[in-house]
Amino acid sequence: MRRLLAAGFLVALIPAGIAAPEDEEPAVAQTPLVDAAVTTRESLRATAEWLARGVDSWFGDRPFEEGGAVRNGRFDLRLLLRERKSPDLGARFNASFRLPNIERLGAQLFIGRDNPREVVTDQPNALSREQHLQRRDRRDDAFFAGLGVQGTGGFDFRVGLRGGPKPYAQVRYQHAWRFGPADTLDFRETVFLTRDDRFGSTTVLSYDHDFSPTLVGRWLNAATITQRSKRFEWSSNLGLYRFFGDQRLLSTEAIFRGREGGGVNIEEYGLRLSWEQPLHDVWLLGEISVGHFRERELATDPRRGLWALGLNLKIRF
Image 1 (tube, rainbow, N blue to C red):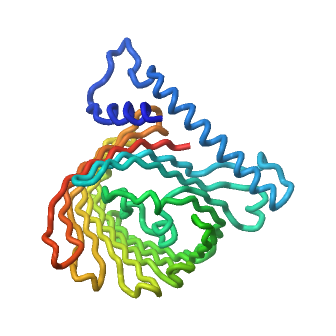
Image 2 (tube, one colour):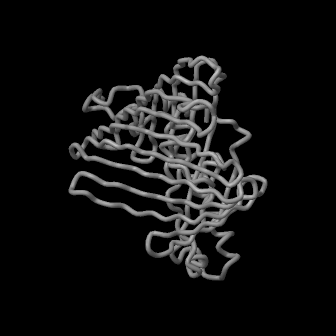
Image 3 (cartoon, rainbow, N blue to C red):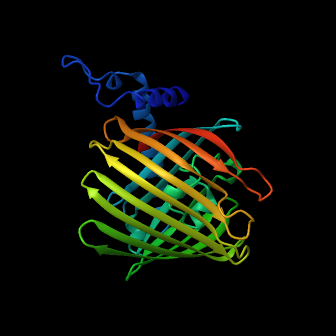
């Protein structure tokens, strides 16, 4: 798997405009490392389906083949290099399922391994620690699983277990407004309950503007408060995204984060530049990100600058 990671990242650095000769197939299609990725993907899907069959059988005797399926399966292997920090290699995955017996109850199963706080507080992926090129504490990563019910009027509900195991519950409301053909405002409010935080809520507001069919601007904001802390934690992302077709994406983002009452209005801000492209077919992708940030945790600390590099291999299954 480590060889697969290294080769995937090297391929991600190859300019998209360099093509193989017409009488040769692309080299990536012939490498044994791509074969290893295929094997990994098949193993992930087989394991997910095995788990889904077992869980669904608890709720009835309808065969899994009658409508059962793995949905939105994703496995990420990421290497993070941040100045003055040790290298961080980590993995995460997420998947949801269509399960015939559970769907008769109006519910869907979801499982994964990720930062449990980000899962419970319903943080947007674009504002996660990984996307900010921040080192993840492996002790904070945990498995989680649960059931979700899609309600009406923009509401949905989730109950689940995260590492510990610790129970949690979520109620989420979403709504979008269109302002002409190029502007969209998305609002999301999630109220959650955990043993550690008790009641809490996360508010997410996103404004998108389409400059052209291939160029999009986005301003994404999120704020979280809990009954225990009673202080807002907030983050903001102002980005410009250029699509080149075939799942190739260039992103430029200004990133900010802070906490109310911490003595520092903005704990960290910086710029992040990312390139993503397929490495094989449509399910194996590579992403490289570079960022420069200025951080200060305490008002008495001097603000210091640092560089960060993120390399990510994504397998969809």
